[in-house]
Length: 316
Image (cartoon, rainbow, N blue to C red):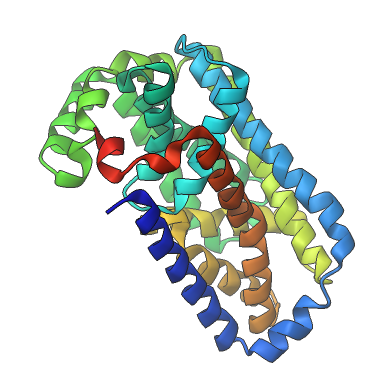
């Protein structure tokens, strides 16, 4: 199946999911709530979302530079944004499209770029865990999830620090169909991974990621304010939002679809927001923080030629 066909299937599923949310919360009520959205907040929300993208692009550029990969910034930006489009595809194909584009357009070996793509996700998780500690005392329910992910990160650092443990993990990957596609580029990339998780590069990449998550938390808070919700403090919004994203990560679904929306709406309801309004707010949040990026990603993917790839070309 070509990637574009999978994209269509996923989009149809997402439309169905959001339609179910809206029907469950009474479409008439949702309409009344949406028209109460204070549109002037868009003048702040949209620039903040775009700023967050460029913060992540700075991290991407930094990781490439650290691995001695130098390409024109315009092409690098297109490739980076292309990854947004395919975050809706399960099986990690979305992340790997950047590696495939670098290989196709600039003949950069995947053994050098696959680790970078994976480390992006690693730093994303580090930043999410760090920022979630801001205000954790305001949201006790999230403490357990945040604690689990903290332990997961500690294990990841141990894994990266020991080549023996790393090689054992590679052996496990070889035995599983889903992960076997990553073995070849990963088996020869331990030094790249270790180099990219040491020293100043770790500090800068982590700092940029924390800044990104802080910006996104501000966006979530502004969406709440745009609907007149002023009883939830910003420091409570941070761990609430972070916890829902972590639960989405555990689901292994693309973008945590359904899990993030459901858990975040539930958390908002527990904090005194009416259920139908919670669902409406969550859908608006996801449109700004994820689906806006997916739309821009498709444009970048078309400009970069990525839509001509099929699934097999991405795997090889």
